[in-house]
Amino acid sequence: MSRFYIILLIVILASCEQTPYENLDFQLVWSDEFNSDDLQSNWNHEIGDGCEYGIQFWGNFEKQYYLEENAYIEDTVLVIKSQLTNFTYDDCFGNPQTAKAFSARINTENKFDFTYGKVEASIKMDRAQGLWHAFWMLPSNPVLPWPISGEIDVLEYYRNSNGDNIVHNVHFKGPQAGYSNFIGAPFIIDNVNSFFNDFHTYSLEWDQANIRCFVDGIQTLHVKKADHIELQNNWPFDEPFHLIFNTAIGGNLGGDINFFGDKEMKVDYVRVYQKTLPQ
Image 1 (cartoon, rainbow, N blue to C red):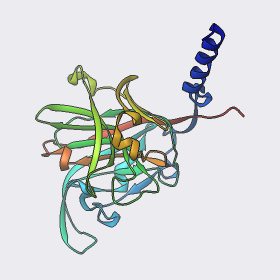
Image 2: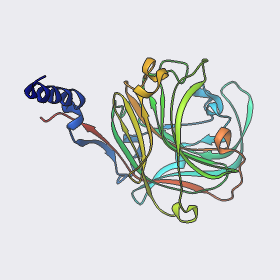
Image 3: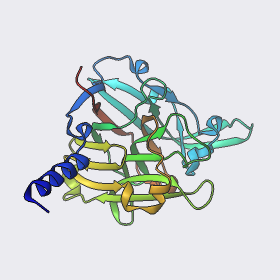
Image 4: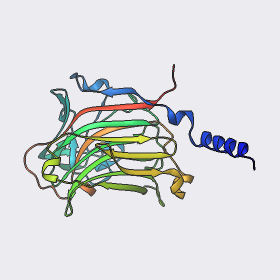
C-alpha cells in the first residue's frame, strides 16, 4: 500500500472516531441558582409516603413522610430539611401508618426534561446514621415497571457499619420485573471529619454511549455501553429524564435511624449543559 493511501486511511479512521458532535463545547441550557424564593417555578413537590404514586414507602421501606414545607430556599440556597417525628396518618388505602420523620422530595418533571448533557450541583450534606441524601434522575416517560426505562444516581449518601458512603449508580432492566441490574462505584472520602463541612460539586456527563460521574472534577464512575452486553441490548438512556433532590430516612440504604435534631441537605446551584450546534 502506498504512503498516500496509508495517510488517507488514517484520516478517514480519525474522522469516524471523532464526530463533530463530540468536539462541540458544553453550553449552559438550564440552571437554578436559587436566587428567588419561588421554588415552584422549576420544581414539583412530591408529598406523602409514596402510596399516591403507586410506590408506598417509596419502594425502599423508607420511614419518612414528605412535606412541601421541608424544601425551601434560604439565603440563595435550597434546603431539604429532615426532622424526626412520630406522625400518624391514614395512607391512600385507609390504613393507619406512622412516619418516623418529615423530609422533602422535589423534581423537575414536565418543567425541565432533557436528553444527554452535563449536569452539576454544588451540595453540602449533614452526616448521620439513617440519612439517605440523593441527587438523581428518572425517565420522564417511563416504561413500567421500574427500572426498564433506567435510573441515574449522580449522588447517594448513606451511613452503615462501614462508615459514610457516597456512591453513584446506574440502574437498568434486571432479570425479573421490578428488579434492576446496576453498575455503581463509590467515592473514597479522604477525611470524613472535614469533608461534610463544605459544599462539593457532584456532576454527570451523559451521551448516547457513556455515563460518567464526578466528585469535585474527579471521575468516579464510567459506564460504557459497549462494555456491557446487557446494556448493548438494552440502553434505556436515550430518552428525556428529569432531576430529583430528596433526603430519605431509613429504608434499604438509610438503615437504622440514629440522630437527633434537624438535619439538612443544602444545594447552592444546579446547572445543565448540552453540546449544541452553532446558531
